Structures are given as C-alpha cells and as structure tokens.
Amino acid sequence: MRYLTLSSSLAPLVASTMVLASGSAFATQYLTVEQAQQVIFPQATAFKASTLQLTLEQMHQVEKLAGLPARSVAWRVIAAYVDDTLAGYVVLDDVIGKFELISYAVGLQPDASVRQIEILTYRESHGVEIKNLNWRRQFTGKTAASGLTIGDGIANISGATLSCTHVTDGVRRIAAIGQIALKK
Image 1 (cartoon, one colour):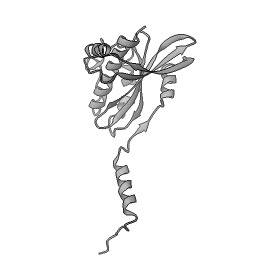
Image 2 (cartoon, one colour):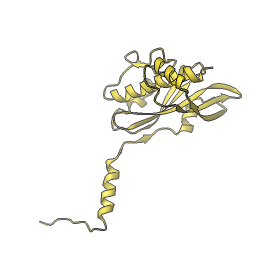
Image 3 (spheres, helix red, strand yellow):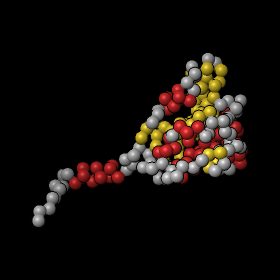
Image 4 (cartoon, helix red, strand yellow):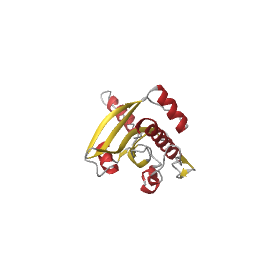
C-alpha cells in the first residue's frame, strides 16, 4: 500500500488552504451599500453618510422602546434626499444569524417607520429565505412600538428561526433609534 506524503514545503500551503476552506463557504453579497440606498430610495437625488452617536440617555430610551440592549453608541446612517428635502434614512447593521454575520440595511421614513429592509450579505449555510421579498415586506410601515417581533407582525421561517429572530430584533432596535434620534 502506498501513502501520499507532502513535502515540508507544501505542508503550510495545504494547511492554510484547509483553514480557508473551513470558513463560511456560503457567503453571498446581494447588494453593496450604494446599491441598497438606490433600491430603498430610488427617487433620491443625494445621499449623505454620517455616524450617529447616541448619548447615554438615548441609549436608555432605545433599550426601553425596543426591549433590547442598544448595543452600540455609534450607528452608520445615510440620509436620503430628494432635491433638498429629507426622504428618509438608511441605517446599516450586522447581526449574528446562527453562527455568521448577516449584513443588512433598514430604510426608515422621516417619521421613523420602516420603509424597507434589504439583506446585503448573508453568510450562513441555511436560512437564506430571509432574503425573500415576501418576508422582508412584513416590516414595511412598522415602528418600534408596533408589530416588530416574531409572532406579532413578523412571521418566522422554518429552518431560519435564528436569522429571522435576530434580523427582526435588529430592525426593531433600528426603528427605536430612528424614533429616539432621527425622527423629524
């Protein structure tokens, strides 16, 4: 019986290839941030990116309204304008699905209701059904105080329970941030 042996010069290459292959082989980028802005606010004539810094008081208010930890003081926000009029905001976030990050964008109207959500990058091997338009449409018009929980306004998807729950919680947190810090 013959055995294949690796020369010592190939061993590091093979080992690094095995490590890379063991990572998430399922990552799919659906939209860039710029593409998401255009999809969420197709009529916008300008976008202005900024970092929203929550105060400690705002963080407490977000936690109370969302029923979740505010998680961060800094949020990536893009204001969308039609001519010189504010059309709304795109807030960017990442949540853990089951094991991997899900990157998504939430479009908020100026009144802080959800306009639309878009999945930017999905890295899990299962649960990609959250990308489906019918599931994402459930968020439209909802606010932090109304119908933004699994089983109360948002349906779960069998096989994607953690992804559904974590994205829904993230959208509720962002809607609360919109209500507390962005609402016009």
